[in-house]
Image (tube, rainbow, N blue to C red; front, side, top):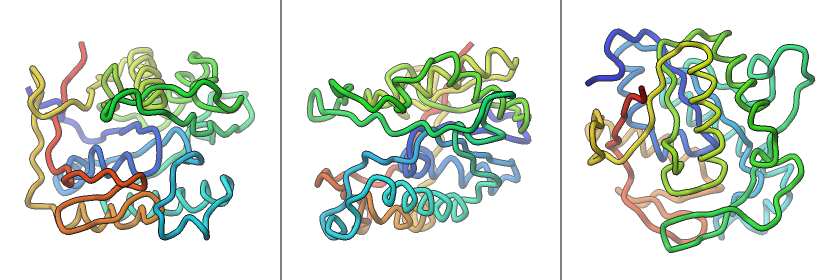
Length: 244
């Protein structure tokens, strides 16, 4: 079943700058090209992201990195055709009556070569240290403001276990449920009951959006090399599954 059938607007909820392109760049392009309004909510500014080797001597302060990554996010989102880009904790993605706040990057560690897990110590202002009800309340505030027809975020394991992905995915599901808006999760394109988006014909545009995230990755032909040296093909297809 096509989760986007009849939708005029979609809200994507991601954890860090670059996730929107790595996980769903092709999906965003296809939706925008079809005339569907795509809004993007990003939970953190990626302060704890590792910087690519070529830039490590120039970007070594978390606050400076956060500012750079937000700018990278906005460039990538513009290239993908996103209508509005918001940061969690800033109005309108903040529950009424609460002062603005920053949800910082919680960081992660590799449990296996492909599965991430939480760190032993995270900052007090990290997304995963926040009250889950408050996080969901902030997402809910934006849903009520932007009035999407569908909310899309991560599945239960956050794609690969990253604690921030899991936390914001749960919050997005709870907020969409409370708002009475359908929710869909991003899953592998071979997952059961997944509706598959194949955007291979938009590879050049996905590449350009990825290049905006220059502190985090390098684009080599049809692959990306992450800051830690991990190399993977550029993702052009993704599964989307309605959660009932």
